[in-house]
Length: 401
Image 1 (cartoon, rainbow, N blue to C red):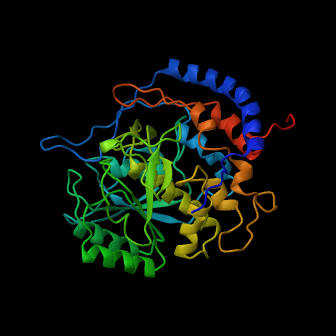
Image 2 (image 1 turned 90 degrees about the vertical axis):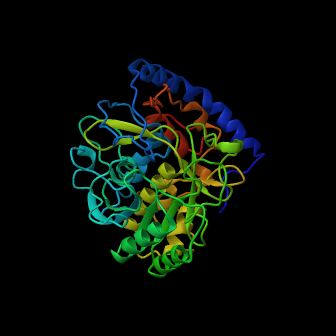
């Protein structure tokens, strides 16, 4: 994993300093407008307490552009790939696309490996939310969308009705997903001990060419390791917020060292029961962003091996020393990590991430999520225009137009 930002580069620091004031003006105006909208979205839980009923449908939604969508420049990524023809297995609490316009036709109900039957319902709502982050479509004036709206999700439930899982359940779910022929498995769960059965299931999936992506710290406990994320070959993912910083974890720990980072704080997405939206946070949410990006890459390059696909995601990341942050555009279009050249949409060799990105503490500091007691997500609309153009210039002052 390499860092695309070199510390102590005075020319880049000066260029960023020149550009940032011009960038902050429209962002500030957009932020004020978003704050006036004052949309409060309910949080989607990852588990339910004893005696707690199923998560009710949200009755709220927003037309604001999600900060994660703007920060990842998904509009730019979609000009290269939308994930068509790729199916991502989401191993979580199931997925309930009924009455959810963003997921209509996007979800295949796989098995419930714990209770038997289908994973086409979702009492908790967490799996439905993750499916939306991976493949949700823009509908009904809502600008939020999944990373790969041209792909589909195979939902596999590896939990009981309340969201609890086990190593045995995860092993069965991974085998079921890999046996269905998918190339990408997003596991939204984790356990503190890896059984031999789970280790074997991961090895078998990788032998079939399946990339497994999993949360480094699914419960935000600040301790671990957690499995399957800590198993060899599994791509571990850690969450960051709009400022590029990890969320608070138990014990004051930050992002998990060595994990690929992706948006996972106050993320907007669909949930079960209706067209309303929820907000979700955590490493599992970040995992869905990485799995969706893998689908974008695989749709464009179906010949990549599991190892090459994983390296595409990690080696094209950017950020300060100690980790790499997900970069969908670069992962799709950059010079391949296996030595070949991949042309971008213009037909030219794609520039390195360093030429497109500033440090993680540049534009991310300008993106603001306005919160409420219910984890309100209010999103910066202007960043969708200003941020991608500035990034493509490598944060250098450029000519008008």
